[in-house]
Length: 71
Image 1 (cartoon, rainbow, N blue to C red):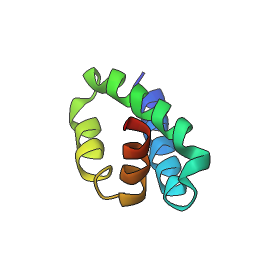
Image 2 (image 1 turned 180 degrees about the horizontal axis):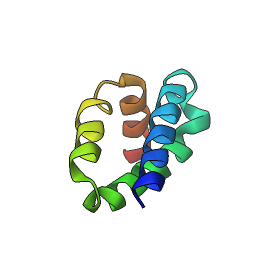
Image 3 (image 1 turned 90 degrees about the vertical axis):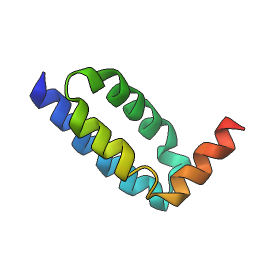
Image 4 (image 1 turned 120 degrees about the vertical axis):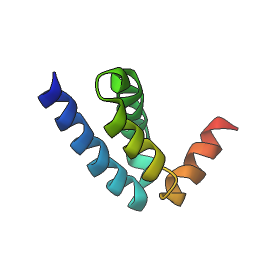
């Protein structure tokens, strides 16, 4: 379980970097991985919280795109 969780986090970060450059293409992959991390948060809350709190607000393009989908 931990190994699979680690791989998903690495993929999550990689897709997030890609989403900075072309977030229209990778948005839904990124969003599904984000949901998976939220679900798996109970297994390793500290790492997931660090990723969620520090990296997502630091990506303005993603936040802008997410806001466009929410509203």
